Amino acid sequence: MNKDSKIYVAGHNGMVGSAIVRKLKSDGYTNLLMKGSSELDLRRADDVNDFFSNNCPDYVFLAAAKVGGILSNDKYKADFLYDNLMIQNNVIHAAHVYKCEKLLFLGSSCIYPKYANQPITEDSLLTGLLEPTNEPYAVAKIAGIKLCQSFNFQYGTNFISAMPTNLFGPNDNYDLQNSHVLPALVRKFHEAKENRLSSVVVWGSGRPKREFLHVDDLAEACVYLMNNYNQDSIINIGTGEDISIKDLAVLIKDIVGYNGDIVFDQSKPDGTPRKLLNVDKITEEGWKAKISLKSGIISTYQEYINQLNDKAS
Ligand code: GDP
Image (cartoon, rainbow, N blue to C red):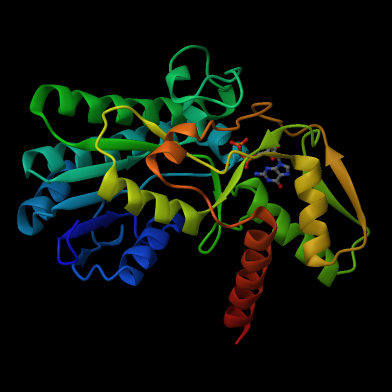
């Protein structure tokens, strides 16, 4: 990308899109295109085509998606499948029709089989059954990967697909029902400390393991890949390290400074037992995560408190 290339960040209000915009701006990219979902509904093909025909972006970061945690994925199955298919079909197709130079599609580590060998290499895609709690989301993301690869095959486009692990950081969703585990636990421990509660409920057994990547690291990786990676095959983005939900809860409890107990609610689903990404490929490409889990949670907690203070004032 040149500093004045026209770059469209789809989903710039979300956690991932906003991090990509911050990174592009700090790297000196000056010609960014952004449209919020209230101005442009990416599920509507005509509107997306009009937008592309009027603006003709050179580069597209496709970070717009319907996302959520384990309960939300399980409950809103139709929305997760339909919205994501529509958004990605429209944007990827328009990027081809309006001859964009390059597109980066963001998938997820949940595209891999539930019992994939760990750490998960990119070639485990479609080698086994998916985790049922997020199957519709995963099926949509797999369709997005195949759509990018099919356009590359049939029309010679340069559409690349990256698979980030579980993410956290600024602009995350803190809704207790629909969020992912890390922001949910930040909020639960903070509220328990403020209200002097005797315990905090953590869903499931605490035994599943997850890998967490700070979204600023992800954004750096995305810009790096846009500038350096031109392969058709998918590429994982992670830290290469994971932690049990129990140990994550203890870490967040310590950072927040809560002194009560942790109680596990085993009526809630555990989801997939483990999904640690193998990051050899992106390491060989020359990129590595920099933000440690502990320092990332410390800054995330500070941002969460700042947000609460902003709302109160
Ligand atoms: P997943 O990686 O797709 O399973 O998404 P989540 O981030 O929603 O959940 C990860 C793991 O954390 C699962 O085993 C959940 O049961 C567990 N977990 C523990 N407490 C919570 C919580 O308060 N919210 C969420 N979303 N997950 C929790």
